[in-house]
Amino acid sequence: MTRVKVIPENKKNIIDKIIEMSGENIRDCMQCGKCSAGCPASDGMDLLPHQVIRLLQLGQIDRIVESKSIWNCASCFTCAQRCPRNIDIANIMEAIRLTIIRCVGNSRLKADDVPSKVDCKMPQQAIVSGFRKYNK
Ligand code: SF4
Ligand code: SF4
Picture 1 (spheres, rainbow, N blue to C red):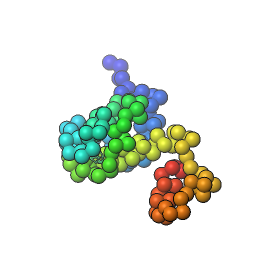
Picture 2: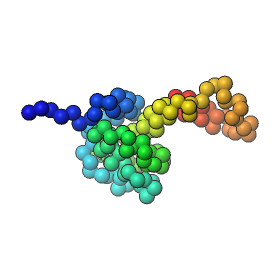
Picture 3: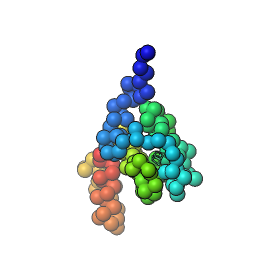
């Protein structure tokens, strides 16, 4: 019998990158749904956290990229606390967000662009964290 690859070859790199960046093993997810049941941001999500994991397992990254769930995740770590397989979905959500930001070259921030965008009343910490987020 021929083995069928679940993750399409053209999506494999991006999924591998997300796994590597997050340090989480998406293959351990057994779809119990405990993460979604406890997620305080689930009302604003079109894909629940366990559905995001399932789509990653299937290599369907396009559906995740189009969804608003990854941007609505509050990184509260409730899902990580509840997961019986010790999967930290907050890490995965962050890795997906970073991957998308990195793919959209135009949204990157260069050091030279910073002065024109900075409000001098901004806390220093906000400037540094914004630069870290958008120059990756
Ligand atoms: S970290 Fe994100 S996905 Fe997990 S419970 Fe909190 S809001 Fe939901
Ligand atoms: S709680 Fe963990 S094992 Fe259960 S669906 Fe969520 S990620 Fe998968």
